[in-house]
Length: 379
Image (cartoon, rainbow, N blue to C red; front, side, top):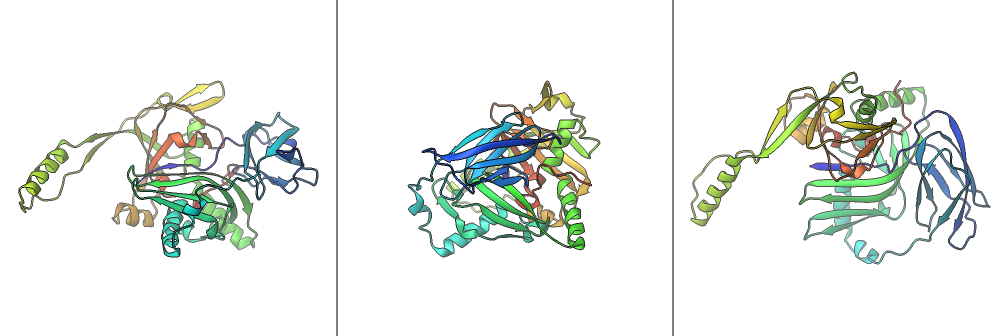
C-alpha cells in the first residue's frame, strides 16, 4: 500500500538560541481563557495560559508551529517565527458535527474491527508498535464509505499514547486520517506534543538505543541528509525508478475474459506482473532532486526514486508481513512528489506541505510508534 504520510503541520525550530514568545488567549467575545495548553508542534515544549490568558514560551529561534488547545474549543494553529511576540489569539467554541450521530452509530463489534485497522496504520505493526498503548481509544470514531471503500477516523479529544519502546508519552491531535482502498493509499495528519517518560538508568539506556535505531534510516534522517547534501555520507543511495504497464498482462486479461465468456476452464498458468519496474543504477545528481532559494531548500523532481538505506537491514517482521519472504536486505523505499507545489525541507528534517510527498516501502513501515521529536539528535 502507498502512504501519504506525515504528521507534523509546519516547520518548527531550526536554531539553538532561545527566544521568549509571549501572548494572550481570549474567546470570540474577548474574554480571557485560562489553562489553555500552548505547545510547539513536534516537540516537548509547552505551557499553559494563566488566569488572564497570558502565556510565555522559551523556544529555539526559527520558524515553527504553535498549537493552542482547550477542551470545548477548536484547536488553533499559528505559524510564527521567533521575531514575533505579544501574540493575540482567539479561540472559537467547538461546533457539534452534523454527522456525529452517523459516526457513532456503528456496533461495538464494528468499532473494534476499525480500531484494529486504525492501530496498524497509525502506530504500525513492528516491535515499537507492540510497546505502544492508546490510553483513550474511545475518543476515536470511524466511518466507512462502502461505495468508495474509504475508512475515515476522527478524534473528539487528543489521542494519548504511551510509548514504552522510545520512552515518550504522546498527545496527538488528529486532524485527518483515512485509508482509501480503491486508490491504495492512506493519509494521516496531526500535531503532537511529546512528554518524556521517567525511568531508571537501565530504561534510559534502552530508550536511547531504541531512539537511535528508530532515527537512522527514517524519513527524518533522510530529509536532514537531503537538506545538508549528505545522502551518500549517511548511507542513502538514490536511483531512478521507472514503471510501465506490462503488455503481457493486458493480453492475459483479454484471453482470460474470452475464456470466461466461452465457458472455458483451460488453465493458462499464473498471471504475468501487471507493472514492469526498471531500476536505473546511476548516480542521481543532487540538483535533480532539490532546488535552493537562498538558505531555503525545496524538493523538486518528477517521477519515482528508489531510496536504499545501506547502513541498516530490514526488520524481520517487515520482510515476513509485507514482502512474504524470509530474505532480509537493505531498507528500500520509493518516493514521489505529487501536486504542483515545491516541498520545502528544513534543517530539522521536517517538510511542508506533507501531503505532497508520497512514500512506499520501508518508509511506510515505521509509523507513529517510531516517531521522534523534531529536536531529537542522536548521540
